[in-house]
Image 1: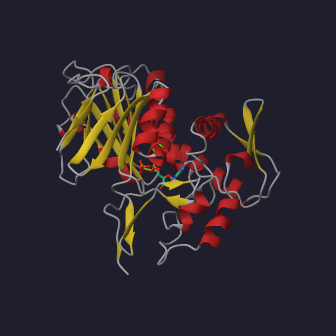
Image 2: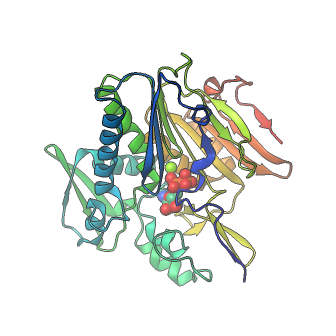
Length: 356
Ligand code: ADP
Ligand code: MG
């Protein structure tokens, strides 16, 4: 029985798929950059305007915002709002703030839109396959274990209702496990963008792992550019360069977070329809939408669907989507016509581009 460690210690698998070209450079005197860790991963904020109170205030206020979000949605904090909701009884409405409700609502909406491929209640299955806070399994779960875990899964077991400035969140079964971590980075990117804009900052680049928001220009006066890197493991191999121009960009992938057991490769992406990790050849999905929260919900759903279904879903919904698929020849990039305008090199729309 072979049992290898994941390639990356990051809990969030493909987040390294996005590397900021400009992050590699030293900050110039006209830009301010702060960074830190949150949600089991990293964040970097770069601005080319002045922040009231300067860099120390920027760092302090972004840290405080992220700490507040973690207190709402971190399943790793036993005292967070989500942990208390998960531990609480069925049919007892929990009052949650609008910030958290927005993330729950996005999870529910994207769940419906994708026919259940994104499921924010999939946690019991994630744990069963060894990708949650529980340990990795030493053997494949039995069909009975999968059936039992699936009984605890489904967004139809969750209700969200407005209540004044707040919302009421209710679960229909006691052992429902809500996990918003696949949307957390996108939500955090949007919240940081809102904070910056409230403070009069109009030129910024925010990355919370694979969730990127940018607006305006960098210190050279050019629009911010982001690299999508080739998932071959070769450091710094750039697949394409994207200019998100004020939109939210999020990337998910399966190539960094997986394990091997008895010669089979298990990804941390679970198909709720089968209760099993996906085994297809789609290694990364990037989505550009108005908000990073929505992009972060959809990238995970596309990763569940696999290359063909993801591409037809993206075309049907006119989404700006960029997929990297592993083929016999190497990695292949496939994108929708809506994604083409964001590519710096502007290749043919809808083209399939072999890259190695
Ligand atoms: P990535 O690391 O690929 O960018 P995320 O960290 O955002 O992706 O999300 C991956 C995590 O999402 C998994 O580790 C798992 O906890 C959870 N997950 C797996 N399958 C699903 C699914 N079908 N719907 C929602 N969340 C999922
Ligand atoms: Mg995601």
